[in-house]
Amino acid sequence: MRHQWRNLLRYSSYLGSIPQKPYSKIASFHQINPNFYSCTSNSSLLSLNSSYSWPNSMNFLLGLFSPHDSEAFKCSREDLVIKVSFLKDELLKYRDDPENVDRVLCDLGSPLFACYVDGSAFVELLKQLHKFPLLAIEVFNWRRKNADFTCPISPEEYAKGIRVAGRAKDVGFALELFTEAFNNRCRTPSTYNALMSAYMVNGMAEKCQLLFREFKKEQHCTPNIITYNILISVFGRLMLVDHMEATVQEIYDSRLIPNAFTFNNLIAGYVTAWMWDRMENTYLTMKETSFGPNIDTYKLMVRGYAHSGNLEKMEEMYELLKEHSCEEDVVLVNTMIAAYCKSSCPNKIEMIDRLLKLTPESEHRSWLTVTLIRVYAEEKLLDRLEYIIDVAFKNNAVVTSKNVMREIITAYYQHDAVDKLSSFVKRAERAGWRQCRSLYHCKMVMYSSKGRLEEMENVLDEMEKLDINPRTKKSLFILCTAYSKWGPKCKLEQLVALMWKRGYNIHWDKVPL
Image (tube, rainbow, N blue to C red; front, top):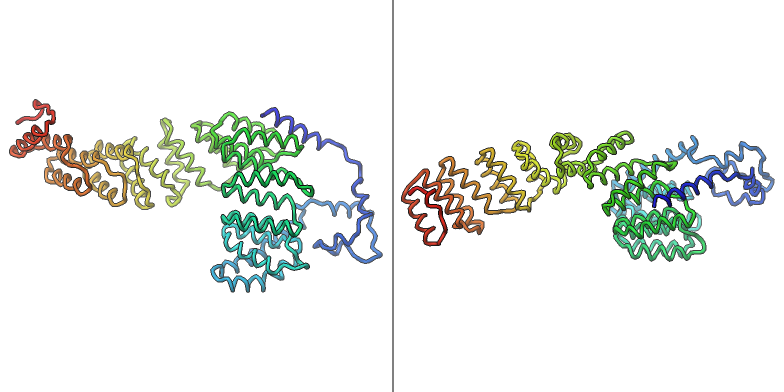
């Protein structure tokens, strides 16, 4: 696998080293009709009068091929984002009112979109409505109704609309847009990739693969590296490692150049399949590329090492991540906390507390809260245990494991905190936590040790209300031990007779009559 990647990297470097003939492609522009460029936003550069002749100035030619990250492009891009952001804010004010949404789009959207006939303004609007997919679909439907020959829907607009529909879990609408784009001769890799992505995020792996096969039969466009990245992600989610690696071989055979997404999707697939060696080898290969690992790579590696229990490398990757990003990923931090909870690291409580400071209580998932309850109970840290139990009740987290409940009981018992245990049991009953006889037996033993016999007897009534049989051998023996120590003797004699009648074997030498 790693050998294939090395060959692919050598191929990419070979492509970059091929000498180009000077101005070989530039000369062909003299045969191009200037009217072809009339749709560009910088119309002042391309006059359409018949007397226009192409200048031979090298500066002019360099201007035509200047990269998009030039200062002028950045300024125009920032200006576009600001304008679209204002339109988005106006739409969000009326997102529950279709009539006003339509009015805002007509009054503010139409003039803005007319200034960007390439569809970049509309694509940016859909991008900014990322968290509001239903509103984005409504906006796209408005665009479809108001499209005409002067401002037709571009392939990129269709592609973005298909992705939005996929995010909104409306695969039918995504397919409808794809079909419409196909009929309008907007068959591009971006539209195919968008529908494949919609199938992927909705768990329709078979349809995604079927669409890929149809895409390969296309004569007007061919799959690109984004297409193969989607396929790798699909196979990775299904833990089909052989298919995933076969796709990598197909990238190699197609002479496409992998990018960071290719490697990240591979690493994600290996993490899902718990194949730690291949995960690490892919990361090492990625370090040799020109682009190298990025923030997403480090997050994947942190998650992989956390699941594998390699805490040292997990911390190492986390430090690399912090060098590249100041924002804390709550989900990632929760994964690291869970890794420490499962470990036998001597300072794991200290590391857990350090990580907990990075996440607000509201972001604690139920599974993580229950895991923390188990860890604090095992370590007999009663103050921390009670705090995290309060968080669990507040966030409606429910403990369903009998073993976790027994760990909680043991912590209260070892701290001789019968009143705190009694309060916990009542709250656990109301919250629907797992109920077991051990909870009530522990209360009885602790009340008995303090001579609080009336409260001990009340526990039997609590058990009956919950349909827990209070007259088991263990329950009666706890009562027998309590009465033998504190009295009264008449109750002890009654219990002994009852236990004798039921045939319970009792060590009579331990029960003074």
